[in-house]
Length: 87
Image 1 (cartoon, rainbow, N blue to C red):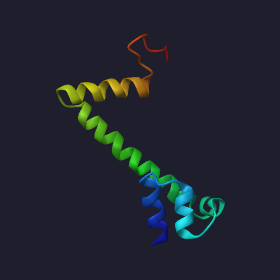
Image 2 (tube, rainbow, N blue to C red):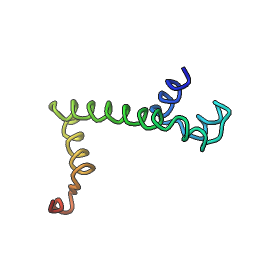
Image 3 (cartoon, rainbow, N blue to C red):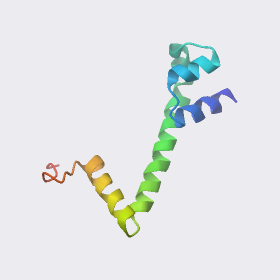
Image 4 (cartoon, rainbow, N blue to C red):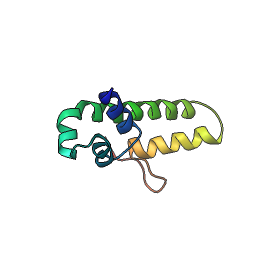
């Protein structure tokens, strides 16, 4: 139960200091015993958000255009002021 709690809280973006406080342990102890849950919680939320963004970008209209522009700028270094860097 505690491991799922840590994973869920990490995925929700709760700071590690607050998670440790709820569990009545220190942050180093939290990281030592729950490292995988902290990493997995964050990774799972990031993956869900990326999939949702891709779904929006695959559509039509203003929201799709904004999602495409955001993705190109953040993932691929595009800018409205300069061409993308050479890869």
